[in-house]
Image (cartoon, rainbow, N blue to C red; front, side, top):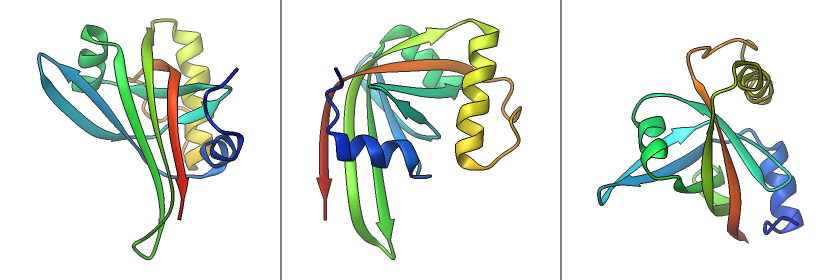
Length: 128
């Protein structure tokens, strides 16, 4: 059963907003924007570079997702979870298509990225 409140799940599933992924290795935090897809308590991202390297070293991550309108926050969701790097090319391609569809880009864009699945452990949700 998901730890994300049902209303927050609906927002995470349908809104086309950026998430900020927080990773930490050797006491040095790193926060970077990512596109994501949420379903059934799991966040999928496809990424590369420092984010991916950090996740390989320390799978504990945080995600912050916020929807604004003209500078006014409408809602926010913060998620804590454990990430798993998925090395399967077919699973990565399928996830990349799902994410790219959500954000309205070509299905095969960002083909060099690797799939990461984040199992949500806890969530904080607020509307304004």
